[in-house]
Length: 319
Image 1 (cartoon, rainbow, N blue to C red):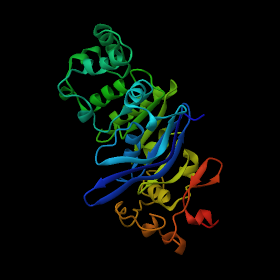
Image 2 (image 1 turned 60 degrees about the horizontal axis):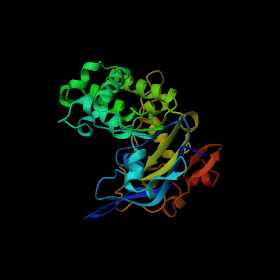
Image 3 (image 1 turned 180 degrees about the vertical axis):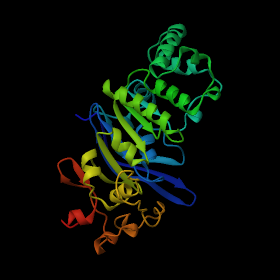
Image 4 (image 1 turned 60 degrees about the vertical axis):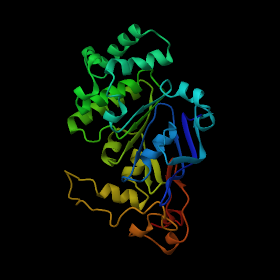
C-alpha cells in the first residue's frame, strides 16, 4: 500500500473573471520513505496540489473532486476533528514563507511546544523542554525559544518551521518551496535537514520550480504544466531520458557549467487556466507538436516501467 495516493484530484478557484482550473485531474503516488519532487513554472498548480493534500486551499479555491488516500484513509472524507488529529502528527507541512506561517506575536518556543501540548497532551514545561531539544536538532540553540519570529533571519525562521513540522516525526513531510529567497549556503543547510529526516523514515513531497535542486535530492520527479501532470518517473528517467517536450525545455533552461550546452528558454507563456487551450495544454509552445496535439488531450501513459508521460508523440510511438 502506498503512503499517499492522489487520484483524479481537481482543485478550482471560482473567481469573478472565471473558473481557474489550477489542478485538473492529477494522480500521483508516494511510497514509504520516498522523496518525490513536483516541479514546474510558477502558476502550474504545484503549490495548490500541496495545499490540497492538507486541506488548506485558500478561498475562493475548492477541492472539486478526487481522492487523497493516506495510509488507506481518504483525507477528503474525514471530519474536521479526525483530520486535525492526522495533520501535525502524521503529516507535517513547511510553508514557502515562514514569516507568514509563524505567529509574529508568540515566542518561538511556545509555537514549537504547542505541537506537543495539542497532540500529546503534556504540560507546557515539558513541552518547552522538548521544543529546546528540537531546536538543537535543526541547528539552533535552546535560547531561541525566547525569540520572536521577527528577530530571526529567513533561514532561521525556516528551520523553526521545519522543527514544528517534524516535531512529532510524521510519516509525510510536505515542503512548499522551503528554500525560496534563501542564499545558496542556507538553502543547502535546509535541504540537508530535510534529507536527514528522510533517512529516519519520513517521506517527502517537495515543491520547487528548480529542476536542478529536485534532481539532486529526489527519488522521483513529477513535472506539472498548466494544472496537469505531464511526466513522472525516477530522477534518472526524467533527467537522463525526458519524454515530454516541456521537461526537455526545463532541462535546457538549466545552466551547464561544465559543458558546451547553451541555455535555451521555452518560447511563449503559460496559458490562462480560466480558458486553457484545447488538446495538450503545452502545444502552443511545443516545437514538436502535431495536428492531434491541438485536438485531443493526451492521457498519462507508462512508456517504461515506472516512467509516465502525457504526450501524443509518445502515445503514437513517435519522437
